Length: 612
Image 1: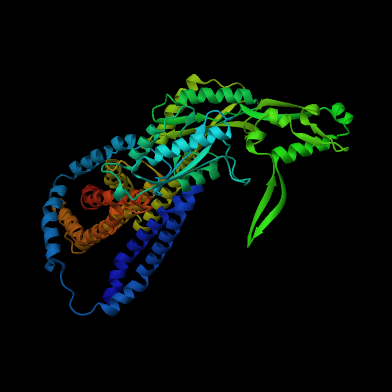
Image 2: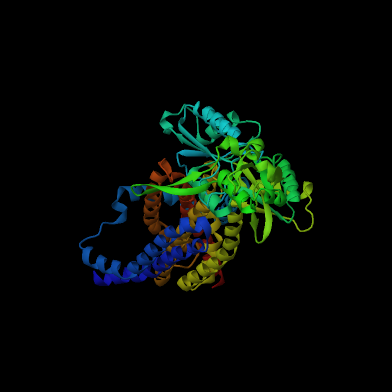
């Protein structure tokens, strides 16, 4: 047994080692990703790489020893297994037909690979598929930045009531403005409404998440409000990474606020005409309203009142001043002193406010200062020492970000002319997609060269390396078509699935060529490789030996991934997009190993046979 195990290990060990090593190398592009996509998929890549590296080492060290220890007695012949007999009976006439016309098989494979153009042009692109959180975040923005607190509260209550009428909605909780924290920059014109949904089992029939969002958006077409829909976790991540409350937006940079405001309005008008836009809103960088108190120093001096006394009134009564802190257990609550809201928002009430003079007299503020209501910027935002204005874009469900941005760029280039010193940049998911694409365009060719080098070290033959690499696109056919049929977009998750599929397809090719080479060597050793007929018999022998392990691999991979495709829990959408290319591609990869590679191998060896 030790000698037999050693011979078997010498035959298949190097091929299996290099195959597993190539699978590990194929995951290198994932390590080049950064941002959200890098943090999400790096653990998967590390786990897969370490597992494959360990499997490659064990395949040539521990496994042969275990085989010699535990495989004893008479080993059953493969043809006695009923499943093997069925597979052989089905495959034998097929491989005979392939070898009768190998050129037709190769041409047919090329035509099938050419069909990739159709789904590729229609897939659409996105950074990552949405993770359904079971909750919606409705974030409308009032187009008037000088909206009052009362009007803001009325709009918030109105939207909450409309949302609650939908049977799919469990609870609604909305807020306007910002929390008492420096990390929240939301103005009073921006609302946050968390819409908690019931379980999908309790929804009316034929209602999906996208359709529900569509219906909610149609019901909330309120004049003066620009709607934005996202999810709580996703929305917070978007705001932390880009500053936008939507996955996609534009940043207009320049020096003059009035010009930025005008450009934002023009860009908004153009984007609303672009197919796929649900809402587009340009932030009103002007239009804010401010109360300015100008102290009349001469008038104040007549009453013995200082400018500091006037400022103290403004600071305390209008802005609010913390007098003390209430303690309740481990909690601390600041106690503020200031005028009620209706008094703070009335110019006449503010002008009637009293300032205490040194002699005890209460002097109206109107006699000490001039109180004006002036216009100004609603909120200043800057980046790289440049003022900027943001345009948020909410796309219709199912819209491809890559396709949408391409259309929008063309329309903006023709209809919006930028003054000197002003720029427009796309931010959000498109920016991350562009960054990921740039990195993959550099890393993927380098990885392919490394895979080619590993294949050459295994085969020591350029032609066999070329056979594996040239036929690799054919193995992706099934995966790409399944992704297209399922209406998935080309995202980082789908790319990860194709990377895993490519590794498995290369392994199929390497091991198939190993079996074919060994079959030829056995016939050559018996001096039974003299003509085309002998070559066909050798290829049939090698292909038949590879049939059972290939069928086992196919079954294990597909059956193992089917539960993912049937799952519906949180995170299932992401995992389905990784599994779909592998499941669909396993069929084309199997056909590649069983039909196309034997046909190419036969053509190559026939040419060598003729030249001898």
